[in-house]
Image 1 (spheres, one colour):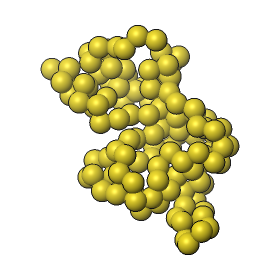
Image 2 (image 1 turned 90 degrees about the vertical axis):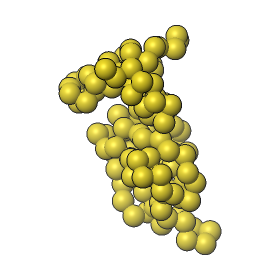
Image 3 (image 1 turned 180 degrees about the vertical axis):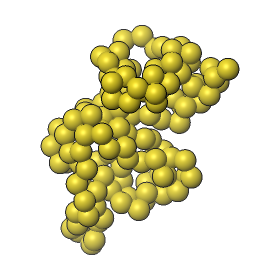
Length: 121
């Protein structure tokens, strides 16, 4: 898999922004897709990672760790976007997001966005 230029990534993101799920093709999944096995954390409570995830398949638990237990607050699935609050305001996540089953998600990092903005006219 080759590393696409900033302009190619910008075009991919713009297609997603305007076309939504219809804009997701195999090329987008190859560039930004990530598979999480069951019980793998996408986002850890208290850990600043600054990533945004768009869930394409599977479900995740959103919960909090209480002592040595995990309390599920909600379950999210296809079409949900997670991690955007801590990504944009650089806050520490107040919940853990964990794969309930195998999850396919698009992962956007701060580097992706830097390249996109650098390529933006």
